[in-house]
Length: 350
Ligand SMILES: NC(=O)c1ccc[n+]([C@@H]2O[C@H](COP(=O)([O-])OP(=O)(O)OC[C@H]3O[C@@H](n4cnc5c(N)ncnc54)[C@H](O)[C@@H]3O)[C@@H](O)[C@H]2O)c1
Image (cartoon, rainbow, N blue to C red):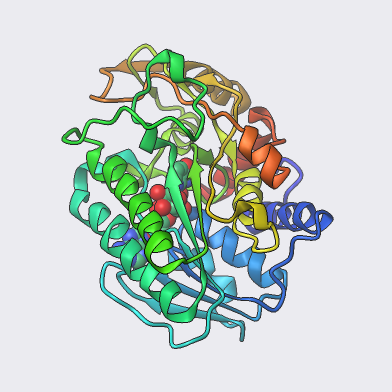
């Protein structure tokens, strides 16, 4: 199927690609001890796999499978240098291991989850961030936080593309506030620990990322998996509003490479920095729907629904900092990224 023989082969090709690109720039986590929260999720599981593939001394993963899956880390479970803890990170924890980097990813991230689990989301990004920071403080480790483009809220057009210096335009009591505002508070916690305890910190603001292993379905689905599943099932593609809102879709291999560059202690200029990691190619949601229909040869029609409250009109990052400090920019076109993602979904839906 599209040059692959299984869903695992699709993932393997992506992991190899990330490794190759990192190692070309001499970025390696070999012999390091890293703790990662949310490591069983979409992005976290790729990070765990790349770190193990690079020969990390130990990768310690904390996750409670709120939105992640055991299957995502199944191939790592029997590795001597991988350790898994089933744990809700909004409750304090201690790995009792001298970790060098704490990567905090644990948080539900799909808009449908905002509606159903707002308190958990708030806790993961506030108490959870504080608990993860305490681990970094205990072991004198570097702290890496995965924030989001959602901290920018719904910027007016003069602030799109959006640089890291933009302070945001966010509704603190809207349907997305549990996520947007807790990520903003999460960033504030990280800065506070830097200020008070001099912890070396790095913050990534991630823009919509998609790829194989992203969850679909009514609770976890985000726009790309939803469209692909609907198209493969020849069901109507549900577009909100007129579909003219834009997103900048980042393919997972680009995103993980960017994150692992930002988290890499050897890139010392990244210390203390907040950096957008996303794609600056903007597409409308309607364009995405049409492309998915074409690439899946689907009989689906587009069905338009009311635009959800506070849905951002445009999303597009300024990537100057990422280019300058990390020597990184995305290289995968939407069409190429969708080719991998559709191939993977075809196997998973078989
Ligand atoms: N994927 C994206 O497009 C995107 C965009 C912006 C920001 N981010 C951020 O990146 C991080 C990873 O996102 P993802 O796409 O992999 O999401 P995901 O839902 O696939 O992964 C999140 C992981 O965190 C775990 N988790 C959630 N709450 C937890 C808790 N209280 N205790 C322990 N584990 C918990 C989940 O089980 C899951 O494995 C999140 O912080 C998210 O906000 C992602």
